[in-house]
Image: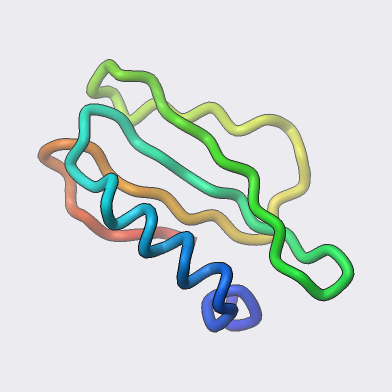
Length: 77
């Protein structure tokens, strides 16, 4: 994870997710390296309070996400 966590792009995406904490749906990014650069794919959850996020069936090397209202504002990888 450190090759992603210390990357400036990942830090910028984490800052973006921080602004989305405690909304009525969750937001996420999957992260992969392409040619040495972090590339992200954005996902937006359902607005239903069930923590629903549907990630397509693509390879994922790292995953960061926000939490919706009432959940802890932490991120998983």
